[in-house]
Image 1: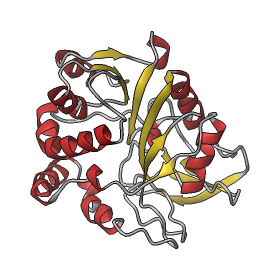
Image 2 (image 1 turned 120 degrees about the vertical axis):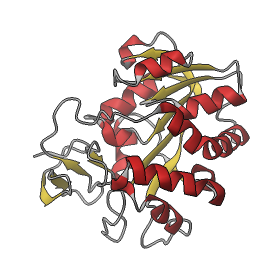
Image 3 (image 1 turned 135 degrees about the vertical axis):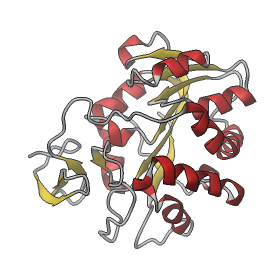
Image 4 (image 1 turned 180 degrees about the vertical axis):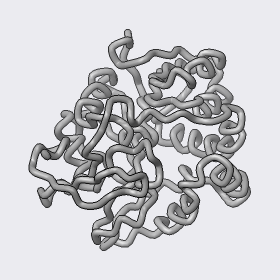
Length: 269
């Protein structure tokens, strides 16, 4: 089987906790991992109560929005595309801060779409339904869910203004030291598991500059919010029970280990 990122040979490496065959690319400058028996729609994720998520992540979302504003990524006069918007908890917080902001969602889940529409967001099924280009594109925990990451990022580029930026996050599938002790494999809807190198290569293949990986503390809950997030994880997402501890551990980036969470901005040249 060929690697979906670089096209080089890959082979079955192990079986995931969800009983999927995980293949690994042989090319040393890629090393991408992926599910070998993908089916259409496998990465689509149904999420629980929209209000529950909004309340759980609200404090975190506000601190993240302040960070985005400081970095001139999002403001009240910019157009935003959220790909894989889910229940829209981040977008609701954005509306709280910037009431007149222009927001469009791509959300494939028919279960999630009505919530987004009820909150006043424009919702489309796919990139083909878009009629404008955007100042900011959010790709938060989404690229690991799509069947073809290179084509996906190419479509993001095509719908981004020349002056725009992409903000991308995805769990790391294999650290620099070869460890896979991350939360990338906990979620059954994940079909791709990026290494730092394979994510960089995906950007290049899509015609984008390489993502600049960063440690962004604002992406993670502060102490006062963690108890709510842990309760949410316990009740709805037990498969990510070690999420908080994993994120804390990555606060100091060991050059031999690298990033547990691949996070950063992509700005077309």
